[in-house]
Image 1 (cartoon, rainbow, N blue to C red):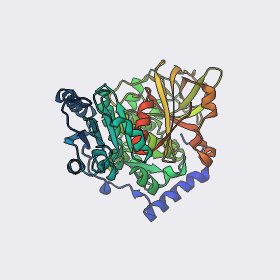
Image 2 (cartoon, rainbow, N blue to C red):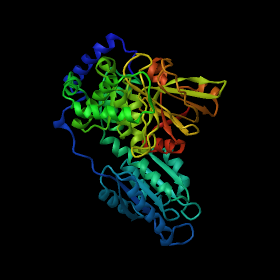
Image 3 (cartoon, rainbow, N blue to C red):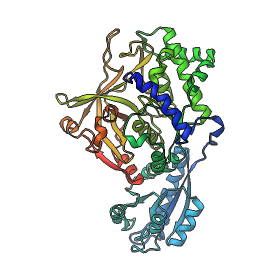
Image 4 (spheres, one colour):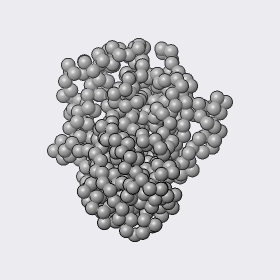
Length: 486
């Protein structure tokens, strides 16, 4: 919640938004300009070389389970379509890439001893992929899949966006596809925004975000939030409020009117998202919205539905959440770093807009209490109780070029008694590998002057599971750096 925005920042937000719209730096939020629903992402699967079953190459029998697993991955992922073909030369590769389309990344299956590189020929499969600037993932079966896997690091050092899945586990084919789809999905993505912004400055420069990630920033027009809220269907708002009340394990401070006002704010956000076909939301003007209804419940609901929503105007975290929603189909918990406890070798993260479905839109909801906001001391927010013992990954994209990362395991989820105020309502405490190292490496040494920006330094996004390997693969495909903080 943007409880620390000054009055000057809040008033300036409308001015900045108006200037941005006037100069055309951001797109205007209007239903008429909304794009049509996106079709599936195409991924070009190249069987590289000649599957002949000779030494250091795949046979047709070896290839069969790979193709079967790719078919299953299409079903599981839902928004991916494979264009599969065989190629040994640059010409064959170019024809296959043309068929897949200009935005299709590449999943190359090493099927021959030098099927990917043709001894580093300029007429090879991957040289052709590199010339077109496409991100590529290589799937290589140990022992039988050829020798080209050892060239992946040198290719990457040359500046090519390539990663390697060197494994006998066919499930890695699906993981490769889930990460490859991120780049084209980002190019299709639009995010609804409202300043003032926080984070590293590149993340809220619309032209830089568009150039680096392909994401379009769409400004909420002045007064549109008020217009939508004034016309919220009261029956729908009462139904939304009833669901929050009925599903809560307990209601401590808020009354029904507090929850109803929050439900109206939630439906207002839903309408703004729907009328612009938006993929994410970042709001820095929440301070001006509080008297009409806390938007925290709405942020939780959007994240549960697979629409990343970030408060405090933190564009670093919104872009992080968008990337990982596309990659993992999971919500992230954006929180304030409550500190590193070197005595307990633990890290604290807390906020008031926590998602309930941390394992995807169809996953079970975490239990929660309805509370008043601890700092503002009003409204209705959730206190979510995440799973003790759950492995967790903390990450954030900064400067549009670096992913910060560390992992832990949840060891405590504090339950704050009624009437007691203790920071943000949802809190998790995670045991980390080395708290002293995390404290020393906070920010990964890459924040620069942005380290003095409160939120650029403070916020992290938490995900259920250990995603260390996926983050490194993703960084290779997107041309990002990774900095292990702890």
